[in-house]
View: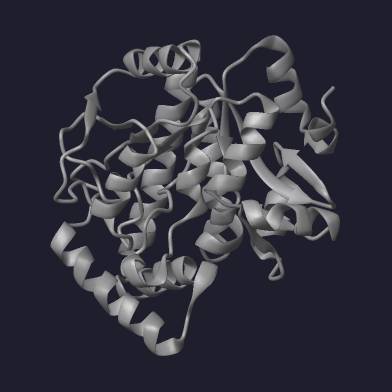
Length: 304
């Protein structure tokens, strides 16, 4: 076994699925520790795992615990991550430090992708990915999620990039990196809480099997890297783009006023928006994560 795999620990459910060739879906853990308040965070994590199981696949929630990369968490571990206050938000740059110091870490999109790839899992469901932040022409604030997508062969099912980002610049950067962007079932690229973003999707596919075939073909011809699969919310669950943009601008102004910077910006903005939408954005967030997990499971079940 390759040395990098010696620090991987698999739950019994994931280990059995790998040995039997069952479809698997990776899930991140930052939504547990940094994305939602207790107890909705734990409730959502368990709901999402069940959504994967109910669609013929096996969930593999990923985190870093006691210096080990955990692929598949127990209910007790999920509950602990949901309650514990001192959990690192771990992207790629943080992984060696957090593991060496044996600190608890909740993995972001980039770190989850890397560990999923090491574990042999080809598809990953999340809420929304990171991207190019607004004002990046001055701050150079670009998420490591994007650069990780350029060379890690794990597809991502999401509701588009987070609407707090500069979506146009993010799509341009994804094109530069050679990452296909596919929207499931509509022509417009979604913006997390909203079905619309003002940008057409570069690609559209309406069938899970077509998406799975595209992924297999991409990797079989040596084109390394991810595919971003955007899964829009239905009208009944989505929040209007203009309404959400108003909340985002308020949240960005408050973050600037409060001096919030770096990796604390995204959780600050999401909490501000949730608090000021009367929980409407949190409900939409939970719904979209569940739907993304369901779609990822159906794609994985197509022989991915």
